[in-house]
Image (cartoon, rainbow, N blue to C red; front, side, top):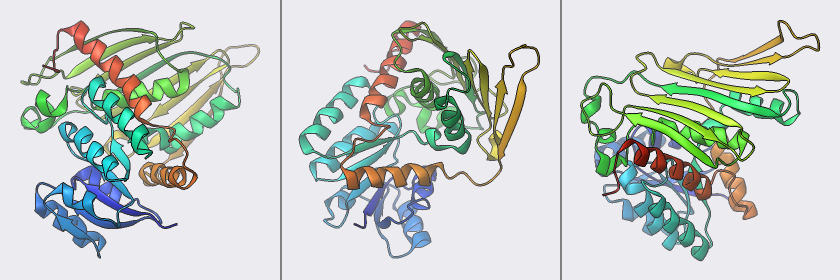
Length: 331
């Protein structure tokens, strides 16, 4: 069964998705800036472009819709696509609020259509390798995760859509922080104790530019997370501590540096650990791997591994931190 895809939102992420479709076929795309849609259609070839996103969803030859818009449009477009009988891959955070994502969960169930949330970081080579090693029991039971994700911003950053709370739903926490929360839940499971603080230190904007989280599972395993857009040098660091060793992921390629994974395996006599390092200098294929799995989900009518319930769990944490910190983005 061939899958025909429509993409809504033809910016940076929409283009990444279009180039990572594998055996699926892009038949239509749309962006409120029609020039962007035209450019994407021209790049791929044989694609119809629109300035109105509804035109993509209304097409009978579209089986799946990829939603890659600013956050304020994610839930409404996903909702419309589901009601038109389409499966959906919606970029994280999937919605601005828990209330918005709750409605999508119910609608997906009623329409009997699948929704995958774009947590593509699960599919980075170093993260996949780390999960594989952890699943073998090499580092033993997990104790805690320590992770940092940040970028250095750019001139005019505080005037972009991510700095507008009615559009973004928040700042750095709902943006890059969502990936940290999702990856931490993927390894540790659900968090039952949520603490942290979000604040605006540098950028002249009404959303936070830094967030610091301390999350605990029922077994007192901890995720200690920092998401920042005052990092000045782009950074991704994700450390997984087990009772028999440690896994350390650094970089995501490009400006974040070469993606790598280091295994520190504790010896019976302790002391300096046995150390093994893998580097992944090749192009990022997480977008393609994620989509291949979603197409398989559709063929098997299988619930996606990264779904709306995962987005809801992450958003519940985000909302709690915002509430604790005095940010009221939902009004």
